[in-house]
Image (cartoon, rainbow, N blue to C red; front, side):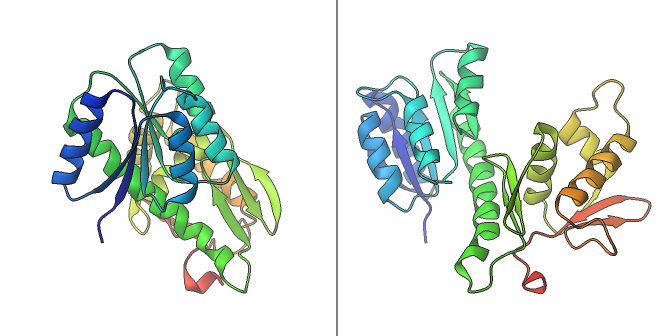
Length: 237
């Protein structure tokens, strides 16, 4: 079954170009020309990803994104803008966007970002699927809104904790070395050592109520690093 992507873009030429290329890659594409249409389709359609322009008729992209997130729509959103201003990017991410691209851009880069966001969205959906069972989950992680629910109690996540969990979600089941985490999540920032990773993992385990005994979610692989197992695993019911 092909993935469904919603393009919310009022510039017809770009909308057609993106739609044709995505269709050629096997995606099912639906389109909206205004912010109002984008909100309606985002709420009512089952969509795997939304490509959302900021400058739209009727309702701007920031408002579209904010309203969808307020309605509990977790679909990954990639925002597009002709502006490269940092404040626009920050505003987009704060309203709930998952990624941000400045026009003009290469379609190959957009396709790569789409693949990453769809994988990420599937990981988050898998965690939230616990709510569909008769037995509620002890742990629900919502990276887009920056918190976890631990036994029904909301626990906020720090920005670096979100980035760390996000990376682990994308590489669930893999043994990830500390050096790899340092490179991919921290970017080898100055004054950051592998010990910093251990501190963040310990803090996450405490927040997950998983610090005692053998950890269920973030396991230590001695001498190497860590392995992540999400709460969707049947052994955690």
